Image (cartoon, rainbow, N blue to C red; front, side):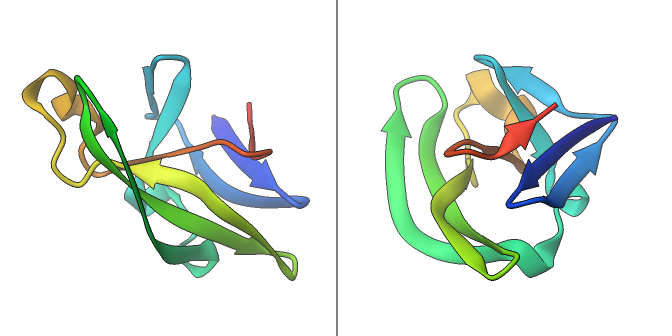
Length: 93
């Protein structure tokens, strides 16, 4: 089981993550929806497409843009559609 934790709280866990470029992409339904806050931030990856972000709120603190996902990934990255990855201090183990 792979878990993502931040601020001492488990925010996601799954046996079916997909690893791309060293990042675990969790199925969206494996992420606690109560911790996700929409963000207007986007970025572009040449082979994956446009990434959209969530901020994470857990334990009374906010980690801005600490999760990302590809709503409509390019065909080379189709396996991460509907999945969320983490960074910015989120521990994935």
